[in-house]
Length: 66
Image: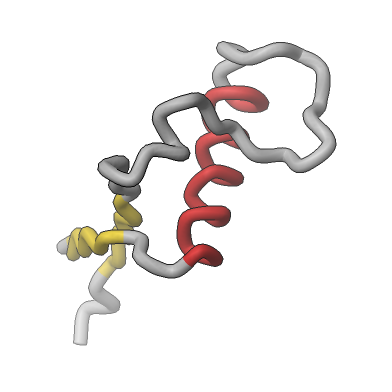
């Protein structure tokens, strides 16, 4: 069985990690973003800087059968 955990990214390090994952998924894996590698390997837009924007971190864990 899988366990899904959703957390609100509140620390700057968590938000930066979210933006790096977003670049990896939408830029590298799916090819939706420019093929040119950005200098910071993060995907962000004008909404990410708004005070009202929230980023979520979702972790999926597999139970080990114990």
